[in-house]
Image 1 (cartoon, helix red, strand yellow):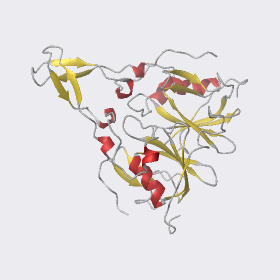
Image 2 (cartoon, rainbow over the protein chains, first blue to last red):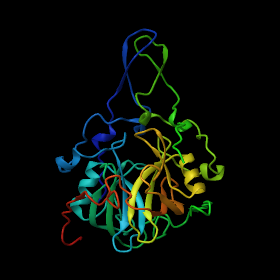
Image 3 (cartoon, one colour):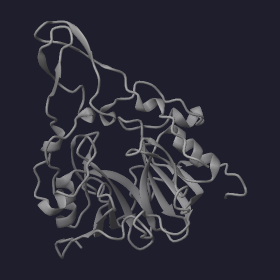
Image 4 (cartoon, rainbow over the protein chains, first blue to last red):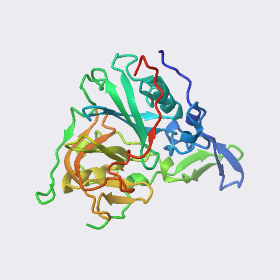
Length: 163
Length: 163
């Protein structure tokens, strides 16, 4: 499956309207960047409308999505999904994210062969986070590590009576 | 420990400046909400500057933080941390988040008794996500469920040859 490069509707924010204090007239301003865009409508997607209506997306239209190895419990990585990425994850059997850096849908494994075969998908209690249990082929991390959290542990200095 | 209600510096975005097309004059506009604020400087925090310099925060100055039960591997919840919340998590032994809805620091368990005692903390390969392995007291979810992902599984309809 090739990558699809159609930007989701959520990524096209409505223009910001504001009144100019010096002249008192309304003016339309563009957002400086996508990350400042506030969604004003539900993005176009084939996602079940009943699910879409419950999602609490970030200002950029995305939800954080945690990928976890279904049998060992390893937390593999965190990616981002819009409605359509969630829809494709639910219906294609392969975990699909929205790449914020490349601005395109991203089927995990399409380049590396390191697919994430979907076992189950759950929303959290606030419907603002996705947990995808997967069977990860090979390394989840682009560095070659099994998970994206293997290489950068921070020092913890907890009081002894609390640890 | 009581909740600390000092908003982090990251939450105070610089004003947006724009030229008014009708009158041609510059004008300063406020962001409609915090979620549209773009960080313009590193927030004030006691976090190790070497760690702070590596963090890739969202536009709101926050990182997603995954809490995982250290021995069973259960993914318990996802919260948000700014630099100071990460610093407190690393140094107090108890997981501390920034509550986006309440606009305050939030020591998990201070109200419910359902503390998260910190076992280890890791950044991911991009330094934009935190994984905290904890020992969770009781239920992680405010609904009383053990994890925030227990109650809302979505139907997966994967092709048989991929599942």
